[in-house]
Image (cartoon, rainbow, N blue to C red; front, side, top):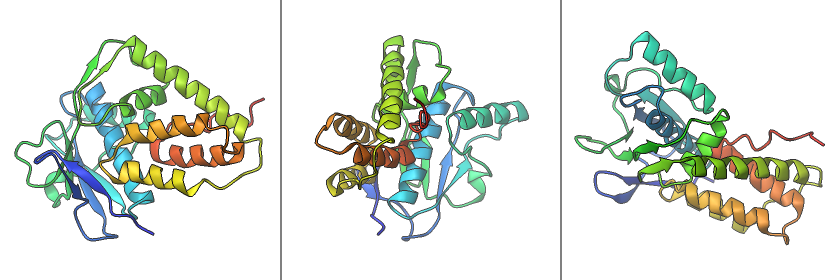
Length: 241
C-alpha cells in the first residue's frame, strides 16, 4: 500500500505532499552546482537518490532525475557521471528546462516555482574516502537542508560504523530469516515519508542493531530493508567467515 510522502519545501519551510497525482512519475530537477565532481554535487545526488528510493518503496512513485542549470561540457558531464556511479546514484539526464518539473533539488529555493529540497553546504576538512559509501553515510547523517562538515573525525566515525554494520549483517545472515517487526518497518517508512529524514532512519538502525530481543534473522531483514533505502552496501560481507 502506497504511503503519502511529504517533503520540506525550502520556499516556505513547511512539509508538503509530493507533487503530482498518486502513481504518476515525479520529475525532479537536480544540478551539480559549481563543481560536477565536488562534495556539494555528491550531496545533491545522494539526496535526490534517497528521495527516488523512498518514493518508489514507500509512495509507489517513480522518480526521473533531470539535469538542471547551465548545460555541462563533455568533461563536466563525465565527472558528474563518475561521481554518481561511485555513490550508486542515477546521474540526472535530459534537460530540466524542457519539461515541467514537479520538484527541484538545489542549494536555494530562490526563484523556484515548484517545491525545493534544499541541500546544505558541505565544508570539507578532510580527504574524500576511498569507499564512496563512507562518504554517503557521512552525508546522510545530517539533515539534508543543514550545512555540514566533513572532518577526519566525521569520516572515521562513518567508516567504523559502516564496517561494523557490514560485519553484523554478515553474522545475522547465518541465522534463519525472521520477519521485520511491524513497529520497525513502520518507523522506517515514517522517517523518510515525513521530510526525508535519513538521520532518523540511521538512528533506528542503531536501535535495531543493539536490540538483543530481536532475533538475528529479523535484524538481518531489517538492515536489508534499510539498505534498499540508503544504499550503503551493507550486504558486502555476505558469505565471509
